[in-house]
Image (tube, rainbow, N blue to C red):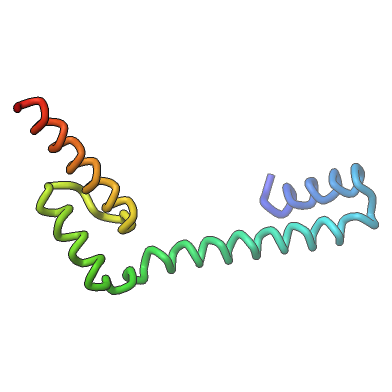
Length: 100
């Protein structure tokens, strides 16, 4: 059974179940959904292709601190990195209190 025959069979079954007046409405909805999907897909691809915004001086310092701490920084926002620095400082403070 060829592709055209399968498409014709699907069209006939759809016509039988939904009626001839609903077919154009379903086709429009399917077209809109396909367009929205492609739009979202293109936006996602563009986000991965374009480099991130240049780091400000503050963000650059934060990244350097985290790198010095041997932490993984890729795809993390400055807020996440600050939290990692804070937790490291808290854990160091706790270790110093225990050792004294």
